[in-house]
Length: 136
Image (cartoon, rainbow, N blue to C red; front, side):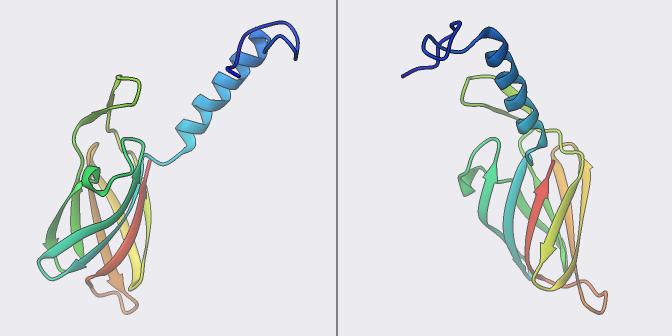
């Protein structure tokens, strides 16, 4: 049964309850990451193997990956995307975190739609490997 506005639990939701839910959903979306992806960098190759974003859950919609040098990859998103409701949304990343199979990972937002990721091994040297990145 669809959600309807009404005055009681039998008739539907009160306008206050509906407004509270809308605010709660908007707050939850703001707290969720813009995107999370897993990638593997090996030599001159960088491949995104899993992607979950507010724009899509398809790997084909993941950011474009490019190798900068050993252990450093750059991920470029389109500047905007159209959400399921037909509204165009800008990609404006502000910060990110990550984890790597090799050791330390550093995530830098170099532009609102460009993310640079550096992997370092346990001795501190640049290293290729697999990493997972989340950005907000």
